[in-house]
Structure formats: structure tokens, C-alpha cells
Image (cartoon, rainbow, N blue to C red; front, side):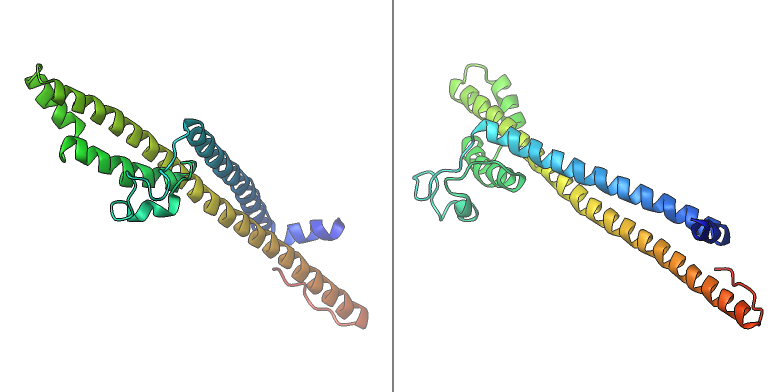
Length: 198
């Protein structure tokens, strides 16, 4: 302990800065990993509860020529961010394009308000509203999964940084010890040499 105190006296600023960096990076890294895990679990649990499934391979409404990018998910539950994005953009959106003829809910709604007796148009407006709402919710889930993934990599980087700082502090202490021993050996031999300040 006396040696450690001696080292702290020789490099007080570096030791304090290094210790603060280590604490910030290790605590921050831990919190980022916790947040990433929370986000991932929340997205998975909320999506799984909706019981949305991709159609089975070969289904009439899931032809490979119409949905080539979705065949890898055939029959699977939408329970992750990437699956939610694929279902929203490549499945729901394709149906919405067919229902609305390329028009959005807001455009069709404006037409329906102008033609209140058109029941077919009113039905299309309702279908578009439901489809766009579900699509938006799925894309929100995908967005949170991306945030969780970023937090995961940032947490790993912070913990690696904390390990690097801890290693540098340990190396500084070891070098200090070596210098102290070299100085003590020189004094024992009879020569005096100044103790270098690290």
C-alpha cells in the first residue's frame, strides 16, 4: 500500500484522470449493455405478442416472384427488428400499393372527404389507415432494435476502453516500481541517482 501511495504522489494527475476514465467507461459500458439487452427483449416480446407470421412458402399470397426478399422468412414469426422491417416494407407496403393504387392514406382520405358517398373509396381509406398504422408500428420496433444494436457495440467499445485504461494504470504502476527498485539498488551500491518522475 505504501508503494501504491508513492506512485500516486509521483503521478497524481494521471492516476486521477485514469481512474475517472476507467470508472466512467466501465459504468457507461455496463449501462449501455443493459440498455441494449432491455431494448432487444422489449422488441422481441412486444412483436411476439402480436403473433404476426410471414406466409408459408408456396402460399398463393407469397409467391417467390412477388416477394423474393421475404422467402427466407417464410412461415416465421415476426419477432425481431429486421423481420419487422422486412414485413413492413416488403409485405405490407406491397399490399398498400395495390389497395391505394400508389396513393397514401392521407391522399385517399382527402378524396374520400370530397366524395362522401363513395363506399368503395371509404373502404380503401380504412384499409390504408390500418395497414399504414401497422407498418409504422413495425418500423418503430425496427428502429428501437437498431438503437439497441448501436448501444450494444458502444457498450463493448466502452468496456474495451476501460480495460485499456486499467492496463495503462497497471503498467504505469509496474514501471514506477521498477524505477524505485533500480533507485534502491543504486543507493545500496553506493551511487546516488535521482528518482525519475514519471
